[in-house]
Length: 244
Image (cartoon, rainbow, N blue to C red; front, side, top):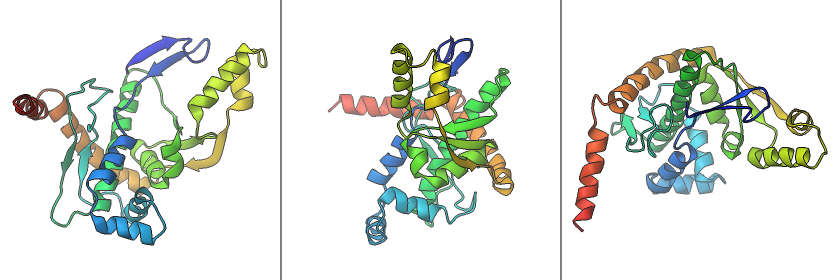
């Protein structure tokens, strides 16, 4: 975890901080740089944006069907390795691999990264019983919600507002203005969850448990110094650019 703050969120409780260096930015990179033109055309014909179309196509697959696994390090790793020099990795690609396969594998990789963080909390005596997702990405992507529930083995709820940070600021402002006596009272009145509850699908979780074991092998091999090829490649790139 990246930080522990007593009374940092709710008085009398500890706030524990961790995070991932990239999630939505990884999907955006793929869509903007690596999707063949025919998918753009198909998305337009279906009346969808490219993210929506790839989600729709990816959702047709069973877990593990694409034969891929990725490390979600396109922007380094924040938790638990704290290393900005790590880079993305895709394993299992063949001539038959298609754009929806990679899109789904990237979503899964970020879910595996979340599970690593959850397990780090659990190992240090901090139970994580349920996930509450906030922000635009989980609101828009039903496949992502289900994958996160399946990979982590936990129910997932959605924040009632797609602008959760702004709502949190409004709660504190309401307390400062004297509308509510404390943040607990403000949250009770202003903070809501959507009715949808995403539960893990047991057969999906069983497959993802197998894939997560391989993810952890790659995570430790490339992230903990056994093989520093990612950093060597970055060093070679910097040297080449310095000569320009």
